[in-house]
Length: 252
Image 1 (tube, one colour):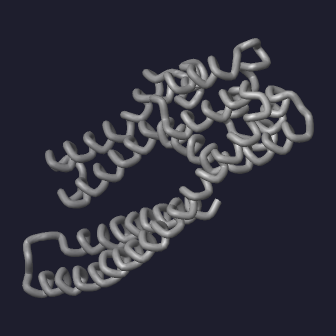
Image 2 (cartoon, rainbow, N blue to C red; image 1 turned 30 degrees about the horizontal axis):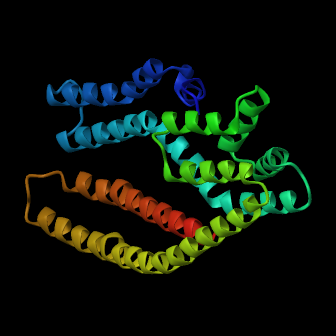
């Protein structure tokens, strides 16, 4: 995508505005921490640290949101490439011109990146130039290399049909290998979740409860609350997201 299109992913369509807004929660967290340290707020130091970490996490999430969106669009395109190739090959075999076949197939896939290519081609930009612009803006991702090879094959005449078949076979072979790796990765995630997400919190709560009985100087209740309401939900969400991504990349 051109820089102008990428800017639409930022708040206010501006990098400076986006990063300025993303810094606000972290700044509020720092203010809370300082006021608590100076005893202007009735918060323990641990609770102040918890609030600050939450605010910093919110700032980081907002700051990296455009990159997450770009990554999501690239993943969606990668998952839909087999459908694009099959549809493109079918249309060419049916007698459509390569460019018209590409535009028709790309419109059916419903990918933001392919929609951008369609708009650029409608403005008179060649498909090769449009993809080269995407590669410059998005740091030359592998999925864009594959897309460029598909577009370049449109000028090969009848050989394009055979080349698209080879490209499709290569992608599906890679998907099959990815499926085997996904099964192994899921087993690792399940074991990790059982160890860190289930057994560790139970042991930690027992240990913290024992410390409270012994009269430790720490705010044990705050630590237990941090563990139960922050650490465990965050780790559970992270595990679920990782498992979902692995399954999607392997099966779709």
